[in-house]
Image (tube, rainbow, N blue to C red; front, top):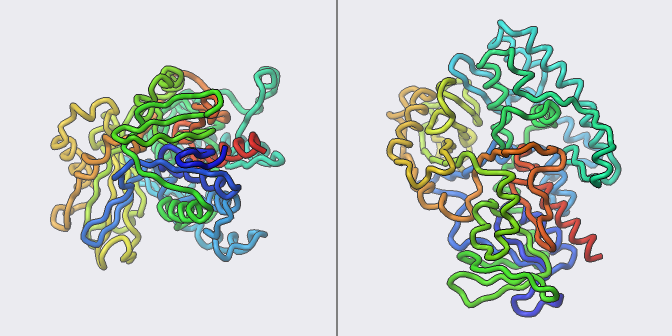
Length: 490
């Protein structure tokens, strides 16, 4: 399709990293691409010299080097300057950095650092779960036996393997042999203490956007141990997004800010037509890539919503991840506390309303994130996804602050400010992407939950494709969709 006026070959609806990666790869291959993003939506927040970035999970705060390399290679970026193709430089840095904890898990009676180096990690859980050492050793040995099977799947030729992805015909799926064990996490962890079960659950929640205690053991292995011997990257999702956005614009991609889509029509020859709310503008394209939470975008897709309803039923938002921002003094941070932290206050209570917190402290001494001697503290808490309108934010904030005072003694004396307003302003917007999901039905985790192609010429790339794999799953979806469109139009 020739690019005339508002006619494009591809439209990307939403400004997430998956859609941006897809649009950039397509524009670099001479496709006309238009990115439609929500007018006025801000994905970060700055105040008094502090800079905050809301996040859905820790994969957005500390990217795996393997993921950064895949993005760099696919889009021809230089995000890993100085890294040799043979990996020697990366390995040398990795050997030095594996001694660092990736994040910290705080339970009512335990505090465990998660180390990439397995021997250091073993010392941590042996200290905190001394009564279950033999059982836990057996559990981790079982995961170690599964890991080579996952690595074998990763080495398939020409597979852009962020993880053991499987895409086969129905017949091959029926008659193929699956080497992975069928046992689910809930049954395997049943004999363990509630604290250790929570320890495993919090690690899974920290790395992805899926809430379940019935993960197959192969998925548990993939999430907990994939790339654990790699260097912890200091590159966060915001830096990667800025790099990709610059590349998108340099390669000819275009951006328009809109309120929302009023109607979507599918024409046999004219492709997809999008009419906008509050604007006479009409956009047409051959292909549409949706990169926004499906339950948020579907209400204004017109008659097409009926076709998307089957996918909405397959995966639903269970919790909203609500951000709070605090400017604090460095002196209030306890000795030994890591920059990334997940904490639960009471094992007998539900995770929402401040009982479970994900915390990100800006790096000590980084004045691009906070003034000298101070730290930016981003606090993510959970709220029932259906209760945003009914919940009293005052009571909700009290629950969050009660938990924070438990973690940071004398915090009330060293707070510069507490900001809950960003959440009030941006959570209701259709671009807001921070949710924990659940699925009422079983699915093959290596094929994903929501397919990347959901209709003729309509693709979906977002956290619902592979919600248990964090940012890596979203990026994989975006690059895979772009490759499918390139192959289709070759």
